Amino acid sequence: MQNVRFGNTEHGSMRLGFGAMRLPTLKDGSVNFELSTLMLRYAIEHGVNFLDSHHFYHNGQSEEAIGKAIESIPRNKVILQTKIGMYNNYTEENCWHLLENALKKMKTNYIDFYLSHSLKWQDYLKYNKLFLKFTKRAIDRGMVKYRGFSSHDTPENIKKLIETGEFYAMTVQYNLLDRKNEEVIALAHEKGMGVVVMGPVGGGTLGVPEEDILKWSPVKISNTATAELALKFVFANPNVHVALSGMSTMEQVKENLTTVSDTKQLSSEDIAKLDEVFETRKKLTELYCTGCQYCMPCPHKVKIPDIFRYYNNARIYGFNKIAKQGYLSLNPEERANMCQECGECESKCPQKISIQKKLKEVANYFGD
Image 1 (cartoon, rainbow, N blue to C red):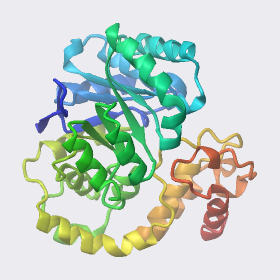
Image 2 (tube, helix red, strand yellow):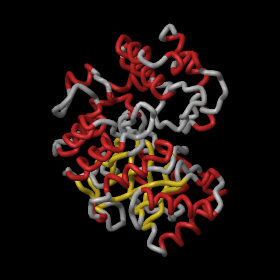
Image 3 (cartoon, rainbow, N blue to C red):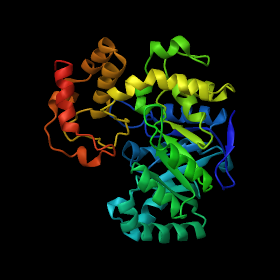
Image 4 (cartoon, rainbow, N blue to C red):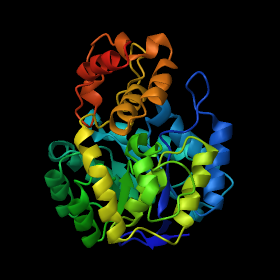
């Protein structure tokens, strides 16, 4: 297993982390705790020790799922990371309530990394005084070990956040299709911060079969998807400590464990070859949805992330038949043409996608 020192902290982490925002669910949308527990424990038993959550993932059930899974596991065997959205203009009382609730749900006395979620520079200027005050007290009380942030802001603004010297960990987006944070990641590593990558397979965009890549693949591919190469690309960056994978099935857990266990990683020459293959794809990725689910739930039940995933798979990779089958497998009320243009989703999208406009485009594309 590949283990690394997590920045200037005492933690050592496996390079594959478990992102608990895409856990398996039941028909009613609630988390399948039985299967989630099996998956999380299997991952932990095979070396995964970094678990990431947020109090609103899965409508608040994500932290609870982690708590059920680690209940019988020695606490020092796992590193827990969760987050608080200071942009919600929380009071100090709200902050303490959310932290105490997270500890209760996760069945632990402390959280290793407590992050200011989706932090923008403007929000830092407005809310960070309270976040620093609150987390300092939480650290003094042993409830939190380190503070950090996750961000979808511009690289220039993320650099400003790093330069404050107030954070010990950072979670940002980085993958084959989106490399704008490469310098940001290098700076954070230089400053001794723990660096976590979210969206290593582009919210599933890089998880579909791609014949051009499989023909010349510089490493052995254990399945018919590009997800393995996408993870290996992230692992090839020495400034990245952990790549989070939002795993929904036991099969995905096992495949990712196989990938991270393989000692043969991508070289600079391999990455150059990947660049050649992906150059044309990058130009097509004008709709870059990471599948983060922040736009959900839609008040009109439209399944926005699923719709955009099918659309990207068709346009970028040419899997028109499979993508259309997937799209039409959605219930009629969940499809793009059912958008009521309320605009609620667009205000939540960290990628600033014109969701209403794109849904019309998708409906036309699939002839719905």
